[in-house]
Length: 145
Image (cartoon, rainbow, N blue to C red; front, side):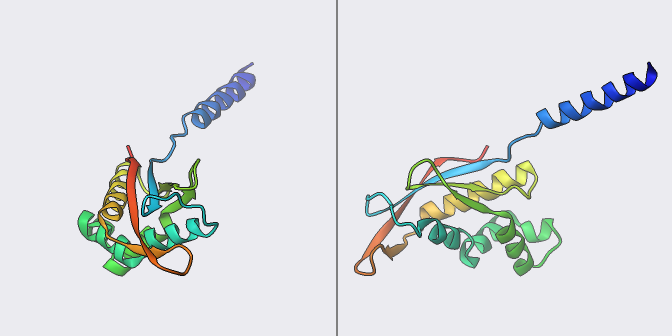
């Protein structure tokens, strides 16, 4: 009887742990070129390159003082961010989901919001077809919470 109770207790604890898995924070951004929807199959790669760039991650590191918090140099802190941040395609071609699953919740929220806010403030341009350049418009659709 005790053995059965012990197995039941362990199973209950495992079930509660599995159900209490907290979803990592995410931010959602909308990216367009001169107001046009993005439909290029390489767009996800481009957005990942931009959000993983040393310029963007260096800004987040400086703004939040992550290197000091993590007891890392600036380059090492930027590299840690680069390995942590993920970018996925959203439900529409111009939506991107940005997550930082390797960080604690508060740090992830701060990092994602700083990163997306910085991106939205940039005046970037790129060529969508190899021809004339278009201004990139970034809107934060959902801040991390």
